[in-house]
Image (cartoon, rainbow over all chains, first blue to last red; front, side):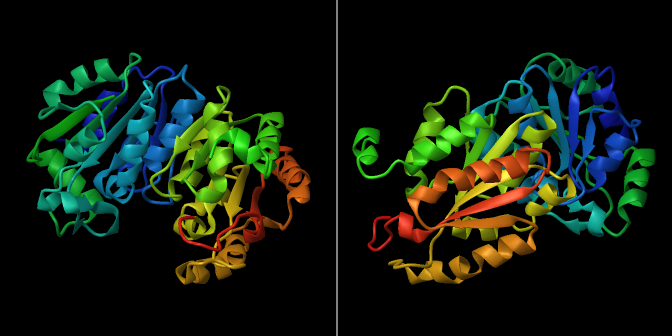
Length: 187
Length: 179
């Protein structure tokens, strides 16, 4: 799956939705859609992104809040899934672009490449799960994202290990060879 | 122990809660600690405060950043050992000038039954200073209210500072196990 296109489709017609991005490629993906006054790009404190989204969602129940981040960031903040599961904010969506690698640091393997299941972890934390395996369901995801429903999306986007993150992403995009595997978890 | 029974011994948690209210703190993130039990109870029972129990103190600075982005004020509460868990996350507060007050119940100092608490307890305050916090120690109950009041004024009164109040172990009995 082309992560740039996936994110762009997801954020189309976002209106007043606030977006928090995690350190790494997810920030590039969101920024590539065009900057927006309601974007907030985290560029430090790996593992913190979902919690920033929680604080914002609790403070602004009138707004939709989307966290868009990667598997490495989510793995480092795995406990935050439990914290979010306790609060169950209906206006928060966590979207994990899972490529199984630390793409910003040189494409080292992450735990999800060994089968560690972020969707399963989120489900265990009382988040509602809905799997999305193809780009065809992005519009469906967006429809679920924009109204007042809380969700967690996981989209797996493996790339070649030896390439740099940007090159790998570009290659995956052009070849269309990405595995299409994703999960959606709604709270 | 019930709130009523506790109040016969001390009311510094009530005073801190009252200061939180006066300063419009809306989100309180915490990892449970014996010394914070009553204050946590007060916050949880308060419909105007959103209490967020954290799996690790490291989630706290991120919560505070999110609250600030949404226009709300946040305070964090943790044991001194939790300060060590937060170090990298504190960079969010500095980078974004997030006003934040952290209440730290000290361990590893006066008469602690647990020697494993000593290493982090000994470096808690200098660590906070290195992370950019203004730190203030409270040794006795009479100082709690003015100290926390000042901390909130410094943090939320326009300075956008990060303030840590260190509640001395003298204020919380840690002389025996079970705490």
